[in-house]
Amino acid sequence: MSKIIYYSFSDLEKLKSELNHLITVERISISQQIADARDKGDLSENAEYDAAKEAQGLLEMKISKLESQIASARVLDTSKLASDKVLLYSKIEIKNLTTGGILNYILVPDSETNIVEKKIAISSPIGKGLLGKKVGEVVKINIPAGSVNFEIISISR
Image (cartoon, rainbow, N blue to C red; front, side, top):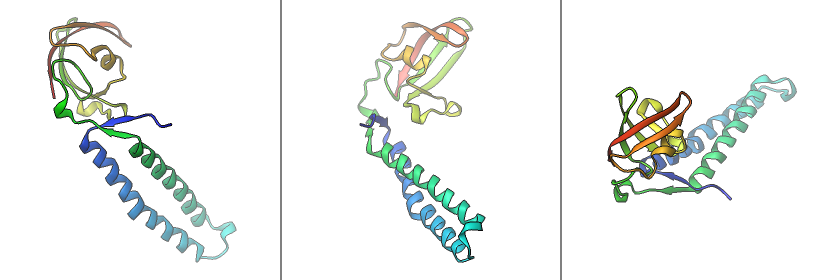
């Protein structure tokens, strides 16, 4: 049984769009590459044919993985989530009480993690430590650099 994965509506649509592209464009392209390589003669010594068949196998694995992800996906309507405590898709502002630095993050499922966009996984040490907490609470979180106290300054959607 597949593990349920939560997505925002837009992120699930991105997955569906990627799957559609792989099926309607990439699959056809690789099929054409295989046909072209096959037309060149002896398949036992045809490197182009072997490369195209390998690419086809990798593509089919990727398609299968995306289909599985989409099948186990659940859309989370972020507009209906409470904003009085930290939940999945919460936009949070926290203060590192050791350094005084202010950090802004969005808690997301593992599949959407992107540190450049300040999206951290809910399963990360910081995500786990903040989950369910409210504005004003001080949370001690064990991170690779040691224990750090964070104060939750704000929570929004």
